[in-house]
Every structure is written in structure tokens, then in C-alpha cells.
Length: 197
Image (tube, rainbow, N blue to C red; front, top):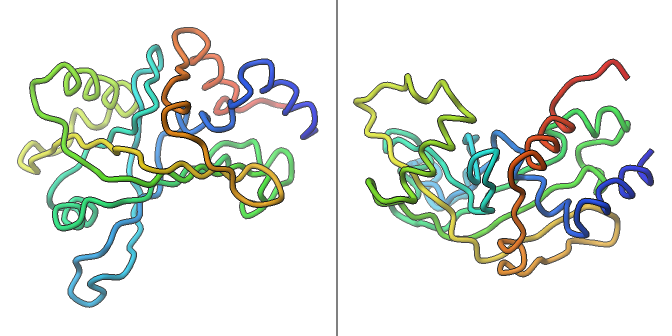
């Protein structure tokens, strides 16, 4: 039941729903298109995502990108982007018979500017290890695609988790709460591990 779910998450953190994207493996990212036929239009793409390792969640979204891709090309001209994740990415909404558009199927919308992480820095080493931990196939991506790591510098956080419109979460408060160690892994398994129930 929805009520029991809220009781569970409230024992973890009053703001837990605003952190659930930290368990998401991918996100929809919207940019301003540079494609000639739709230049200046919003354009959405799917990107793999992490905010750190499962043992050290930071709240900062990191991406592994190639300049050959739509998204990286757009961002090279205009760094503004919006990243969206939804509980529909887990099996929670299906189990609860909640439609993806229903506000109770929580979605988090992060808007800001994307910037490259400088290669060789501690942040680069950390974020690359985290990306490869969550997405091991990345280690075998073609080396001639000039991969780089980008992060979203968050300017606004909107969360829809109930009826009555979006909630706007202060970025400072959002980044201040980190899951670490077994707590992070446990919550990840609760959302993604299929059960017979």
C-alpha cells in the first residue's frame, strides 16, 4: 500500500523521495537541439547516470559522453540541460498499479548547466570509477569516440511525488544528505531486485 511505503521511507529520511534518483541507472536528458532540422527545439535523449559509487552517493549527477552523440553536441553549444528520473524506472509503480503519469509515481527533475570534469583530477577518478562500477559495459566502449565525463551543476530541483503540484527543493539541502555504505546498497536492492511478492 502507498501509506505503508511512505511510512517506510519516512524512517529513512524525511526527504528520501528527493534522493531516489541516486538509485537510477539512467535518466532522460533534455537539451536545446543543434540538429539543422530542429535547431533551437528541445530534444531529449537517454543517458546512463551515477551520482557516485553505491558506497558513496554525492547527489551530483555524472555522465559518460562522446562528442559524437546528440547530447554532447548540443551541450557544446548551450550547456543548459534538464535531467529527469522517475520511479517508473523501478518496478514500484507497476506493483502499486500506479500509472507513470500519476504524481504518486514520483519523478525528480534537475535543471542546470553541464560541465566537463577535468581529466586526471580526484573528481574525475572518482566519477569514472563510479560510472564503470554501475555500468561495466562502459569499459569496452570504443576508445576512438573521445569519451569524457560531464556533471550537472544543479540550479533547480523540482519533485512531483503527490497531488497538488511540484515541490521545489533547495539545492544546498539536497546535496547535504548522502547515502553511504550498506544503507545505499540496501535501498538500491529494495527498488531494483525483483521479488515473487
